[in-house]
Every structure is written in structure tokens, then in C-alpha cells.
Amino acid sequence: MRLNEPRMVVASIGVFIWLAGLYFTIHGLLYDFKPEFRYGMWALGIGIVIFVVALNPLAQRKSGKRDGST
Image (tube, rainbow, N blue to C red; front, side, top):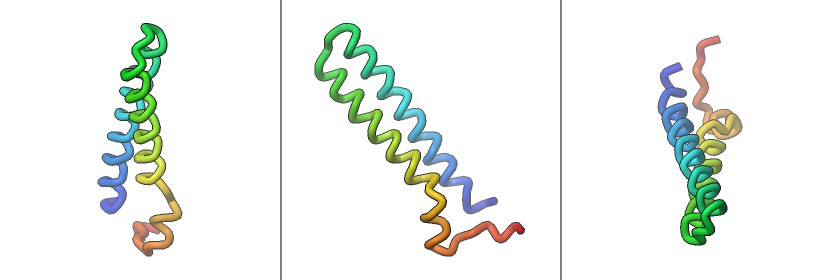
């Protein structure tokens, strides 16, 4: 279980980045702020990528780092 804790922290940071990007994207769309919309979309994409990469089960399987708590 100890090996998965940093991955969970990185994944939760990715979720918070995604939520901030979603906020700025919606705010930019509603009030017609093009830079805010653009940076919100970038943050949304980066947050999703961080979340998926942090919790990718194939990366754990290929690297041989498993819990061993079977």
C-alpha cells in the first residue's frame, strides 16, 4: 500500500487542476474572455493527463512495482 500513496496524491492534484480548468473554461465561455477560456482548456487537458498517468495500472504492471500484499 505504501507504493500507491504518492500516486494518489499526484492523481488528486490532477483532479484539482482539472476542476480549476473547468471553472475557468466555463467562466471564459459565459463572459466571453478568450484568454481565460484558452488557459482553462489547457488546464483541463493537463489535469486529465496527470490523473490518467498517475493512476495508469499498466505502468505499475510493466515496472514490476506491485504491492505484494496478496
